[in-house]
Image (cartoon, rainbow, N blue to C red):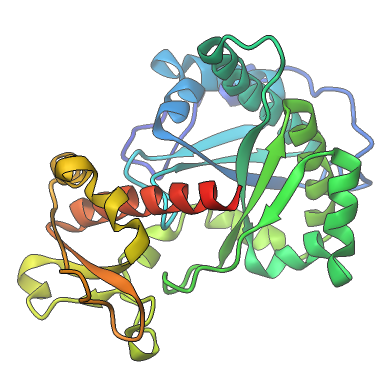
Length: 313
């Protein structure tokens, strides 16, 4: 396995031990065209995919013929605490690798929940904003067809303007393993036809600069703002909806203390009624090293995202 100091973790044994390619699927005429897919996993799930000493990721690469790369544990998708997996190769190889990865995560979920019936879970794909049109289609016709054909739920997030330079969106697939795999197959066939999609393959994990860039939104809305002592203290202020502040604080301040302890950052929340300019978002000031700020912000935004997702379900 490559050193954890590299941008991605993968196994050098894969190229030598790859098994013959699986039978071709009828996905499209572009089966042999080099492709890729990126998706989010929790840190715990990432550990399961890697396996002890890299054994699992080596096995999956050997069985599928695809290359599987994983971001480092502190390199997460902006606004989340999730790491990124990129699977690349021919489409059939990618599909085989995805089935192995998602199948393992589904199996572990079944063991935890003691369920006999396959659960409906979510997987979030990362797709360049410029390529989302090929999934949506004119008037939403394509995405409706994808949902009908796969029986999976498919939702595309809006582009998050809070992160300067972020040009990717999340495509959330909800369903059983079979439904998710069918949706992935269909989506890949659409992305394969998009000439712009392959461009991001050469920069699969370019969020570090994006995450630490300061975004100055008009009137301070939805942006990140450097503290006047930033050069000395590395401080940023983010906005959190007033209705979600309780989740960030936790009972008796438990959540915010945990976030501070885990990340090493100092966190201060503005008083009631003290909002970001032009919004009803409370000010949350995070101070510390860039890595500490990054981790604390990820943990805070994950709590907000989880609350928002529950409200939408």
